[in-house]
Length: 150
Image (cartoon, rainbow, N blue to C red; front, side, top):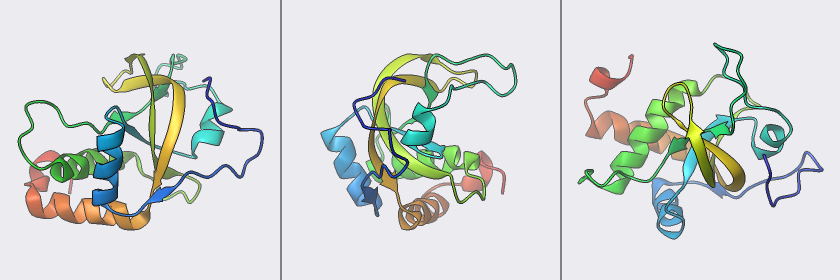
């Protein structure tokens, strides 16, 4: 996964976003953002992406898009909350994994239809408070019981 950031040390950090408002601002500046739950850009740059079920190597990092679709006529914050919560099912109680925002070149689709990114550039880390805000917004603005397992 070629990238312009230094991965020679394990202490690489990206800025933490702490609210959906901040994430919306980042999305306005960089419209092709994605979110990924992993051990972060340094760990991801050192390992191959492999489909767990088939064992096949993927041509890029699986990530979920954050840009609302053209048909979406609700607030962008609603879309972001939904995307973060739906892909948040990948969150496991592992202190080494976290949500981070990235951009890159889409080189294909994964087995679940998610974009696969190469030439990844990390943009920001998502704070726990932002993820909690997204979960609260999702619960209050959507019929979440219909879309996710309760």
